[in-house]
Length: 184
Image 1 (spheres, one colour):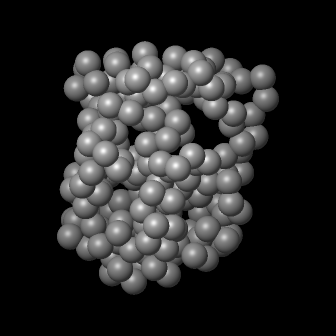
Image 2 (cartoon, rainbow, N blue to C red):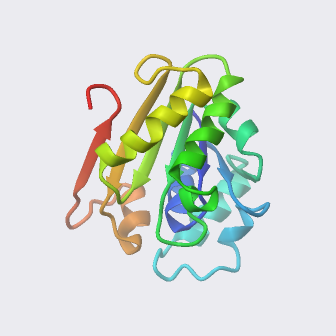
Image 3 (cartoon, rainbow, N blue to C red):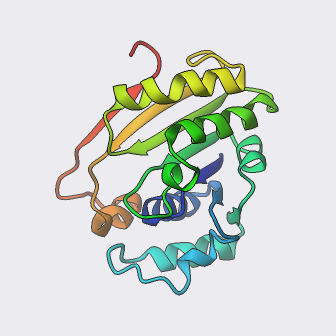
């Protein structure tokens, strides 16, 4: 699968590394040309193993980075918005949830076929969807549940165990709350 990830904090990079480890092609969208260089030279003591995942993804050619949100969304089937705590998280990086909805929607307007959008957030799914959906639908010209599918994953994972969990090593405890656009 071809996947874009908006947000290059530890959540976005862990997600990217774990997905490439499973054979998916991932494009990280970040502030700097980086997004891949972010894994090098940064201290990820709270996410052990992240540097190895990044190196492997880059080495296999499955992981790339860009600043071009429009191309990344158009070239992929699934987009993750990673709303973390750090300064470089997806929604804060692009000016808030409404701004991200607008930008992703504009990119989708020029794309054929359906698209899946997943937002990792610490906010309540209903609140996220109430903010995101109107802007996304208006700017894309698409309808949620028909040609764009939106999911919200409320994240309770700790950074220290996320790499292990992404690699398939069972967590000591795991809680996830999900919401979706259809029927909310």
